[in-house]
Image 1 (cartoon, rainbow, N blue to C red):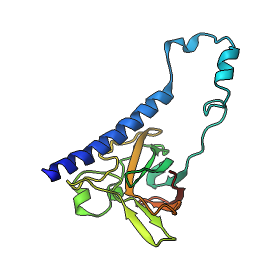
Image 2 (tube, rainbow, N blue to C red):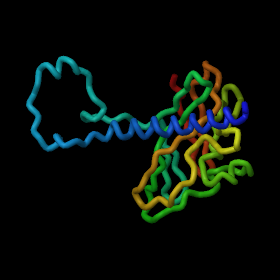
Image 3 (cartoon, one colour):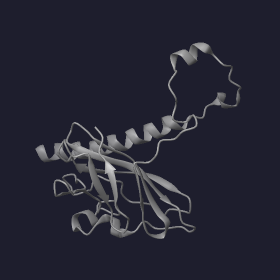
Length: 192
């Protein structure tokens, strides 16, 4: 009974992470029926919301960019530590090349348990060189990696949101190296 609960909790965590990412993405898209109507300046709205917005002339820089084979580019948007003992890496995998690309099977790593669950980012690691530790992608009780899985072929210019979850390094560790097979490594800052 306990094993079933743990498996369901693991699947629930993956579902919750994906749902949260999709909800944030949808919220940021905007696009409503009133987009074409001219907006009158309102002093009340300026006073209530006086801070700058990310979409008003400046965009947040990515936390890191990892270049891979055949024009694949992994743009990391956030590396966040949570209270549950996880570090979640969120980003976008984009085909910057000129032709359709299949995401390489090598990104899954070489562990049999992960490979049998389809293509994933299961080969990713976080390396804490100061603490001399390497953190591998977490798995649920059925051996499925807690990452984005089963990638479609990416057409030129196409991208898709991705995530990876790792055990959290010690609280004092704020910089780690994100490594993914066939991609250039990048130093990322762990927030939270």
